Image 1: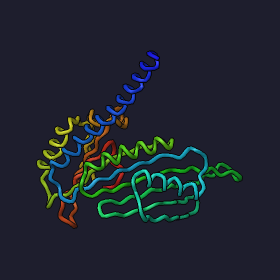
Image 2 (image 1 turned 45 degrees about the horizontal axis):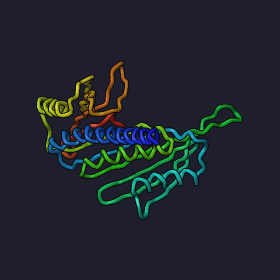
Image 3 (image 1 turned 120 degrees about the horizontal axis):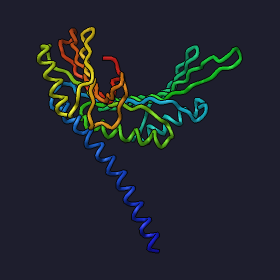
Image 4 (image 1 turned 120 degrees about the vertical axis):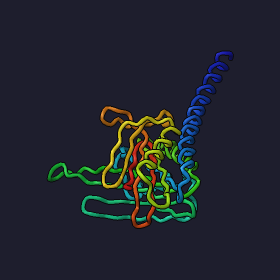
Length: 250
């Protein structure tokens, strides 16, 4: 009986340890949200993205819809949503879309046929998730963690990124831009790994201990991307911060 008790206590500590790690991860990424909020950008928003290959055998259209509906349900999406299908030569897509007052969610399964030989075709299937949130940036961290748990429970290995964006009226000087990026990095204890400027887009790749995930690029660990660009049409400077990498064009 005593042995069973100690095993039970040990299991409780394991569960508590996992919960503690999850909470610490949320708190760490919450610091990134706070850092971005301090920029006082207008029209602030966030984007949670995930992409991964479905490896559990070929999924029919009906099975693809079940996958998308399960994810939607576990994300808390209730009520009406749109299911659509698109087909091209060797590519097809089944998607679920839901638009709400403060969010847009698009879930997709993409099937791509590859010709192995004259008589053999191989189909690869991929899951793509995009959750666009308006205002309330802190909710993005919770959505990211929730999405990671959902996909893990479905046996889908996926890359998940988190992106924040905002705007400032008018253009800013190079000195102001550099100061803005420097203060952002200081707020998240980020270290610059690489800088790049092309076609009016200034991009900084960095690393911070606040984010667990990272990508290995050119021999360096990178998990923060900051980009600054100027929209001449709107006369606004646009700021982006993503972890670990930016997947959306800017």
